[in-house]
Image (tube, one colour):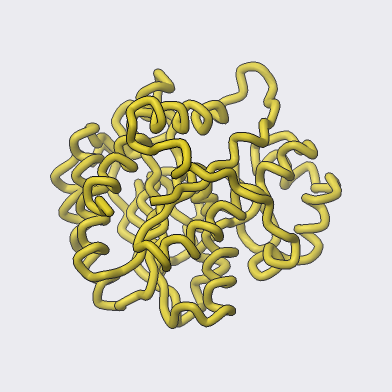
Length: 299
């Protein structure tokens, strides 16, 4: 199993910034330290070219990101200060997801230790998301004719509004979002199937809702699944409002990955959100997702 990372492009953020950018490097260290991956299984991502980004984003927005001429409103909406380093990291993050697509089609599973930037729409970013890697990779894959249908299983605590805005009209794409209904974003953009959960939903009710959504995804018979495995559904997450335990999160990941394995559907795992305190809990949760992936796909 090969997994891609982009933390070799460091991004300086102001002291006290609430986005935990250090979690990506910490996760890679954790995966290596626990022997979940060997060094040759973790591959540095390469920045994607702007032409491919344009499959999902408008020329004006892409140019403003690359040149640092973002409107102040959009930069505030993204929540990350613009810098050349942020541009390189963003392009590498999207490149990692596209590289993982090709690897998953060959091996059955791959992943990106970044990505899941589902709040970015065609003409603007939001919610710590600059470009939408899920949309870019999906449209690149469909353009190349590698699959006829694909699905996004978005289990971040926040609804995937940007992905829905870009891909929602595509009949070849099934978008399933299971999220906290009363959380960000305020305005939800309809997915193929949205299941909004009430605050403080715990393991049992969450897993029942997940089974319902998975049944719909499998009926669609996608040729590839993007699994947005955000861990901000944990009870300890400061930006979530759900109440999953680590055990519930493990059952979530095993349920999704086992269903795809049994249906012979290749899977690309992307990280999504995670904002628990202490940060180590978020790192452990993301690492658990990949441990489960290795157990379900042992080859």
